[in-house]
Image 1: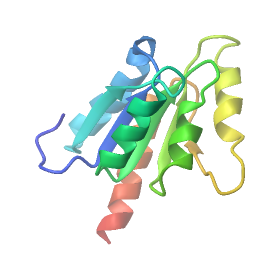
Image 2 (image 1 turned 90 degrees about the vertical axis):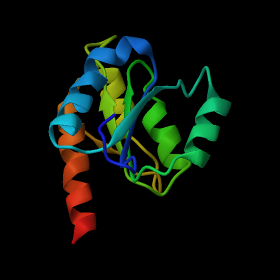
Image 3 (image 1 turned 120 degrees about the horizontal axis):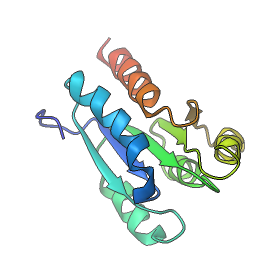
Image 4 (image 1 turned 45 degrees about the horizontal axis):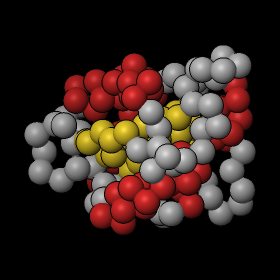
Length: 135
């Protein structure tokens, strides 16, 4: 985590196997002195842990990194009004399955989506959103 007092961005990954992707986001946030925290919480295996985290989290933006069914970004977006940025991870089908799962959200459950394995773009988008909040 960067040294700022308030955590601005929460990175949540569905699995430890997503580490290489979420580390890209961490690097960009660190380089830009944006406070963040990273958690590994599966929407399928740990739904209560995810619910508890979301209820107690004061971050302004979520970056959700997920592969396979890629339910995590949509589940987070269904439980918060804060911006959620989904990062599909290449696993099965080259990540196309995760990409399609993340972009096909129902009305009222928006998730911004970046390219497959593009954790860095999720961080850049989070920074742009934070910049708007400063104005």
